[in-house]
Length: 224
Image (cartoon, rainbow, N blue to C red):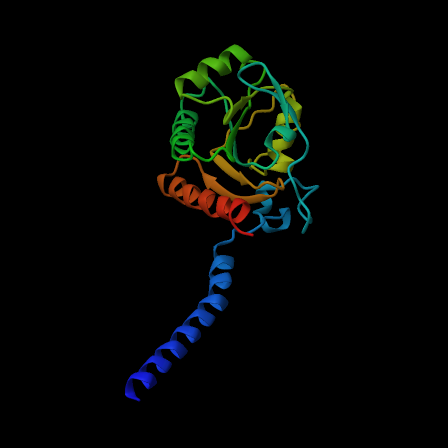
């Protein structure tokens, strides 16, 4: 009788434990989900005045740019992808080399995740020709299928920086005298929503970005 009682107690314990895990697991998964950032959630200094009151449905605007292979690409090339966006220029002697080295590390870290991409926009597109971007990409071993270095219309790129990604503090019109220089990285999900902001020169932020790419990848491609 004692044996039967012990077995019954064990079975009841296992059932209760399994039930508790079934309830707790989804909650734990939800805790890992990243915030979806709306313009109203972001430091107003980073947000274009026309967007500061937007509290829902913000997504990265449509774009058409040219990569380091001379190929025109659009947001359709990022369908079902998560990606990290940044802004740089090939002749930058200060923060850009640090940022590009950090992207190179991330590219290697997520080499087995084709759903993870990187998009670096030139802020001096008149200078950063396709050839210049190709040479820059070779320096950092950028895989054009995973890490696109973009040139194109300056006003278009600057509008993306200010009104889609909220990557820069200063105002401007993308004109000849306008120039942006930012260390910010932005994590974007498969729905083109903003999911995180990071200092591309910070070792701590790069570790956080790697962790959050993993979290977002699991949210997008693993969870049912």
